[in-house]
Amino acid sequence: MPMLQIRHIPEHLHRQLKSRACRDHRSLSQEAVVLLEKGLAVTEDPMTRRKRLLRVIEEKPVAADGKVLPDPVQLIREDRSR
Image (cartoon, rainbow, N blue to C red; front, side, top):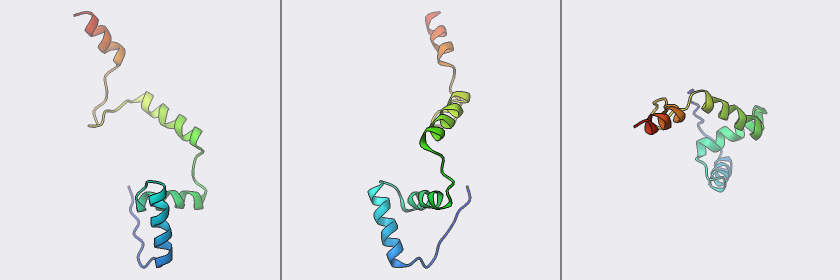
């Protein structure tokens, strides 16, 4: 993922960003990305984003360790056949 570094940000902007990040339970970087998305009008509406993410999950479910999860139906059938 590309990185962006901003130097010499005015103190009043830094305070506002920090305040918003705290209020929204985000890091400074996360809050900056959210504000950039809003400012550039590139955000998806929440419903469209949710549907897209669910399609990705359905197509290829992945565990936290990065491995592809097995089909739960197949696991249940194997367990029943024991």
